[in-house]
Image (cartoon, rainbow, N blue to C red; front, side, top):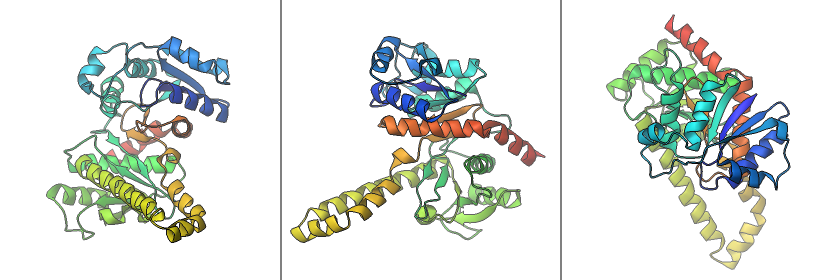
Length: 333
């Protein structure tokens, strides 16, 4: 299986990206990786790493799409950038199943749509991170920003794709919920009410509405939302977690007693921190395009990159794209 990696996307590219790719190669013996970026710089980094040369390919791409570039303009004009060349390789090689990038989110999403195209009958793609939950099951939240304005039909497509993704990672009968301002069926905007009716009439395991405060409780496996609401929900969760962990850190240093207490709770606190560590979750998939695309955090280091490549490997092994196509066809009938 061949996975394409944007070696020059991300805050710590290319060093950490290349190191992560090598780690993923060592974990999967039938994996092949294509590193896309400046060949000389990648080769220089690889000289200090242990890797299997016959399973790693370098494709030269001297340019970079920066965070300051307008995504649509960059994809169309920066033909020799690492992300554009990576998408071209993915599109033109049947044995390449996925792309991993920690670069510009806008460029990654735009490139996926313009270069790869959507799966037939999928109205819009959706960005779908998996968030940690209190019971360690994890929950997928989609869409998280790819589509600010949505129709009910779009949310139905999101639910189908989220259902198939969770099945691909081992959840037998995913519980699907609709993000809303209340759990009652009659609550929400007209679009949300229409989406609720579509989901209720579908073959999916739809369990009703869910409020944002319950997303991380682990009572459902997939939360469906329009991109605006989903992004607000995600950023609120991230911001709250950052504040709470910061406050907790300050409290443990506030007095001698607090330091003693922190020492006694050290393993517990480490466990909580590890539980909500994005590096162990992997990248956010862009569901709805014709091949697997995973977007990592911009500040991902080698371990997070390796986790995301392994994630892409698992999804490829489980034929995610084909299963989404089949599921959409069933709902269409």
